[in-house]
Length: 637
Ligand code: ADP
Ligand code: MG
Image (cartoon, rainbow, N blue to C red; front, top):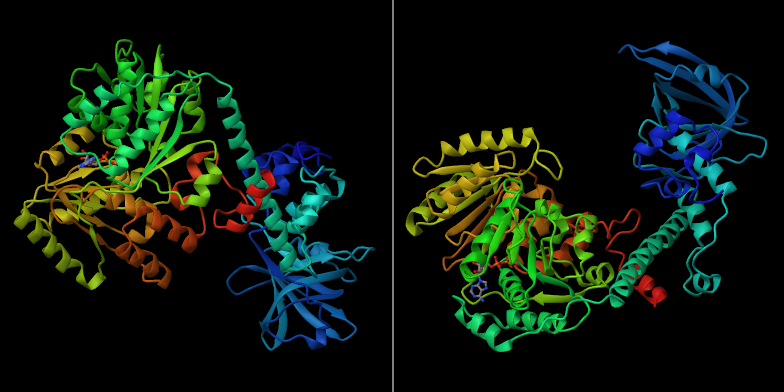
């Protein structure tokens, strides 16, 4: 049996089981074996019945002496029986599994594992794990460390384990790492790791197995990015001539002076454009660090070279905003906007095409530059086809990615960092507002807005953990909107959510930009890129529901002008962990520092938006495994 074989080659996996497995994302033997326990129960302690203490988690080996169905007071059907060994008897009890009375008839040799508790005045196992002892005496579900699977989608954990056990026995795999290497770094062979992740003898074995499987994932990511790099290397790109004088003139004409960091990044990019291999550069810069202008300067260079630029933005709002900015700073250039509402736009004559993924349906003649803003919002494949034309590509992100991760995930890209804020920026003051001060804080907000003629965002979270807004979310934000209307009586309130039609969205947003709306109540759709310098306050409801990186992004909506800005975090969750996370936000203002911290506190990559990166999807590994990441780098050379 091979890892690439379909699960249907396993005994007892017919069409219906196959469907259930598919639902768990399992189609091949590889998938099955990488569906790993998320925790383990220690059933390794085998005890004689007379020595059992209540509350212990143990395994007993014995013979069934009786079992029957019995109704409980609450109308459940209870299966109650006993097993005995040479030292005594103990009760075994289940609920609503009437078939057990047929399966576990008196005389059956059984291993039973679980935690013991009181049953009237006797000791009993309630709903224990069990299995019949066969001739070999070997057990899979009891008497050892036993894996618990995160989701079984209607398949019993027992059934799943039996399939896994079978597959492991029949499997033949070639480890892609040599024995020399696994020995040298004291890591498991692939085969050994797969066996021990499911059936470890102790926790150390499980841990070591996980390390090896994690290593595999990191190695895969690194190798893929190396492959991408190799591919581009051999491809010819478009060599731009850069007219330094014209560029400098343009930069001088801007309404503000570029920061040193912006100058440096532009120089780095220019040296890429000057080569005949396509630029592949990742620009990381905190919210508000001024990434847009970099894209504008590069687009101008493309224009001077007679090439089109394509600017891809994740939302209509943002595309529209970029369109306005580009038009303002490059008034003589033909620029078009393509979103779902005007997807039929002809772009043939445009020097710069700005839009959402709707523009990916367009045919382009002469794309010389591709700028992807907030790249984690796009699927890798969506963009691939544009890159077939081998344009220079600048990927911009405000999602700060810790260095170790960036280097692994994007080892095929050159990375530029905007680590300096424009001069006029003030640090945003962030408070974690205790619940008893909520109404006082509303009063304070009203006063601030009155005094400074400034505006505020109030962000409500999505009701359910999902990428997209649901009707439920809209309902809840509408409800909050009405509530807030009764609090901010003198102010004009606006409501923004993802289910509004795009012209309605644009209308609300424009009114907010023009100061006709004082308080903008919204779902997190405002997360990316809205630029309203007069908004100086942001209130984030249920802040515990957001990752630090997202909170930081939201906070980046304010502090964009000359006025002092404030971020107020509300939460009903008073766990220590939440407090620690949110307090960090009140103290740290650098997105990169926060990302590193989030990695430490939460350990997972998903808070950083890395999960959506396609390339970076980890099933078993975790971005906080710095040692394993280092090892993967060493091994891949
Ligand atoms: P982000 O990096 O979040 O995309 P933007 O490019 O939207 O940031 O820039 C945020 C704001 O800062 C915009 O209003 C922009 O005009 C302004 N800005 C950019 N660079 C500078 C600078 N060097 N000096 C002053 N303001 C700047
Ligand atoms: Mg931006």
